[in-house]
Length: 436
Image (tube, rainbow, N blue to C red; front, side, top):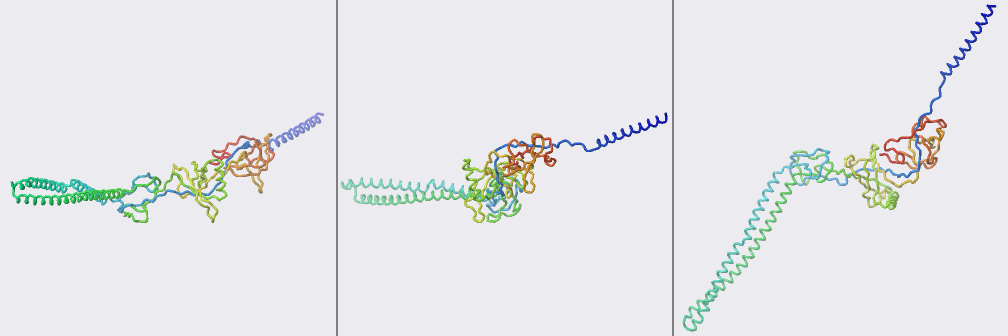
C-alpha cells in the first residue's frame, strides 16, 4: 500500500511539474514574440485658404550700364599706380601719376607770358604817345591864338599908318602857318589816339590768349594725375609703372564698373509684356517688383524694379528685352553674372498651398497623406496647380481645415495611427511664400 501511494504521489508530482513547465514555456514564448510598436510621429499643417503672389522665373544676366574706360589725356610715362586691381574706388580718387615735369614747365612759361602781357597792357593803357601829341597840339593851338591876336592888333594900326604893311603881312603869314600846324597836329592826335586804342585792344587780346594758354597748361598738368571719373570697382591695369601713356592710344589704362545699383537684362514674350502692362494698370503703379535668384539658388536680399524696355520686339525671337536695377550696396553681384529673375504675374486669391515635400507622385497620380479626427493616416488624391516658392497650389482634393502630413510620410501607411504635431518650416520656406 505504501508502495502504491508513493508511486501515485510521484506520478502526481510529475504531472504537476509537466503542467507548470508547459505554462512556463507558453509565457516565455509570449514574452519573446513581437511587441506592438507605438504610432510613428509626423509633422502636419492645417491648410487654409490664402492669397499668394504668383511669380514667373526668367533667365537673366547682369551688366554694367555706365562702365567707364580710364584713358590718358596727355602723353607721359607712368611714375606711380595708386590702386589695387579689383578694389573699389571713389570718384576723384587718384589712380595714376605721370611724369609732371614737362607740364609744370609749360605752366611756368605760360604764367610768365601772362605777366608780360599784363604789363604791356598796362603800358598801352597809359597812352604816353597820345599825351605827348595832345600836348604838342595844345602848344600849337596857343601859338595860333597868339598869331591871330597879332593880326587883329596890327590891322587898325596899319590903317592909321601906325604900323607898316610889312608887319601885317608877316603876322598874316604866321597866322596861316600856325593854322596849318594845328590842323596837322590834330590829325596826328587822332591817329595817335586810334593807334593807342589798337595797342590796348591788342595787348588785352594777348593777355587773354596767354591766360588761355596758361589754363591749357594747367589742365595738362592736372591730366598728368589720372583720377577715377566715377565710383565703382576698378579692373586690371593694362599699362604698368614706367610704361608710356599716349592720349591717342586705342587701349585704355583700365576700366571702372559701377556696382550700385547693378543692372540686369532679360527677355519676355510679347504676350507676357502685354499681361504685365495690364497688371501695372490694374495696380496703378509704373514699376514691376523684381527678385533675383543667384546661380547658387540664393535669393538676392534686395528687391529690384524694372527701369527700361527696348523700343521694339525682336522679330526673330518674338521677345522684348527688359532692363532693371537692384540695389547692390555690398557689391555682391558683379556684371556678367547669370541668374533668374522672379517677376510677379498676379495674385492668386483664396487658394490652398502645401509644401512640395508633402506631395507624393506615382504614375502621374498625385496624393498627400492627411490625418483624420481619429489620428489615422488617410490617402487623399489631389490636383496641383502653379508652384509658389517651395509649395504647390492645390486646385482639387483638399479643403480648408484638412491636416496634411509634411514630415514622416515614409513611415506612414494608409489607415495606420500616427502621432501628429505641428509642422515647423525652416526660415524662408513657409508655404505660399517665396524662398529667401
